[in-house]
Length: 230
Image 1 (cartoon, rainbow, N blue to C red):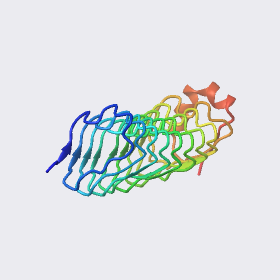
Image 2: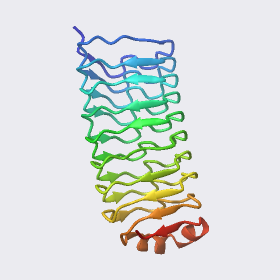
Image 3: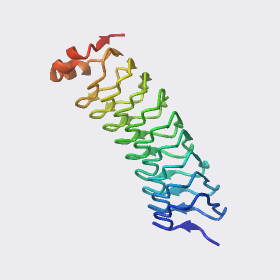
């Protein structure tokens, strides 16, 4: 019986509209369905533990994907450019949202992140312009650079107490973002984190913003950003 979908197995199968994966599958390889741009939905069978790098990247018609809790690893850019994907639930066993996993998923409006996730990687949700809200669980310790870059529909976000570092440009070009709440456990903030975020209020009781403001004073004043010490 088939136990894995190999690397690039269905790479560029543009006419593929549907596929049924057998229950014996345990792994989906890198680029397995890369640019199968007419594939509309797929169900990952129970037992699959790994979804490889760019496995479904460029599947621009993919609107629905069901992943079982057996999945513990999702590779970089696995769903990049899945323009019609509207919602997704990350399985409970996944610990890292890898680089560019949902990069440029334009219609993504809802995503559920489980408590098992400890890290949100660089460019993870970059360009998800329809994402209006997201809950970051208390398990997350770090948010990589540009993770939410260009999420222009995002209006508010709460950074949980577990997070200690926020990378460069994480919220850059989040033009609708009006409110961020952070705990004083955040001790490291990268460059241009709030660039092009106008009329925004940051609720934060720590001290790391002092250095950020000094380094980005022109950006801060021009964009009417208010810091409220809690």
